[in-house]
Image (cartoon, rainbow, N blue to C red):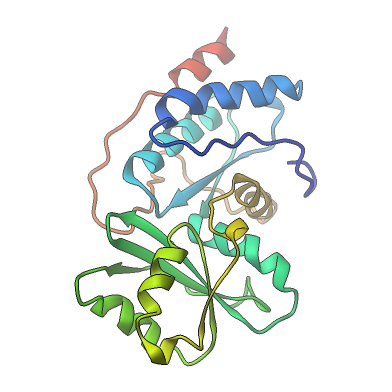
Amino acid sequence: MREGILLDEFSREEKHIHAEQLVPMVEQLLKKNNTELASLDGVAISIGPGSFTGLRIGLSVAKGLAESVNLPLVAVPTLTSVAFALKNTLHASEQTMVSVLEIQRNEFAVASFSSKRFFEHHSEVISVLQHTDSTAAIEQYFMQRSEQLLLCGPASEKIFRVLQNYHSLQEKIFLAGNAFRKCNARFVAFLGAQLLQQNDIADIPSLQPLYGKDFVAKQSTIFARITRNNSN
């Protein structure tokens, strides 16, 4: 991305390909656009919540890219980037958006955002909902909200189906279109550019993924290939 304009992107919707495909995709993207890693102004990473493996690999690659040529690294909350994609279509409406991700089987992370005052008013606290047989945690989270809610994110359809079992929620819970049920790197890049301008730079050695629950991370060396290529 340059000056708020998306120049190019690669997108793959396959499971379990991070370790094998992420670094080659970065290399291809740079080569396709005749761009050297060192010429970038910074690297943006989707910091979570999300899958444990995906977050660990993604952050390892991002750290490797940034450290190899001394670039600043900025961390974008994943739920924020998902909601931001939807926010751009709502203009000045007063709707509240709720981003939903499944961080582990039947455990969900959610965050709510104001479409009109997106950057000034949104929930920083991530709630983890455990989807049990009673769906008590999910029910309680949404029952306590009085406003209409528009669900977005990868787990939004799954949560929406659960909430349709409650008559009192059917008239205030709505589901965003298919285009807003995915994590998209272009919005991570856009928000990352804003953080870069604000000098909201992450401390690379101490930066850890936002898992949404306790997890012991192991260091990955997946970025070694890119580091080697840039040192040759």
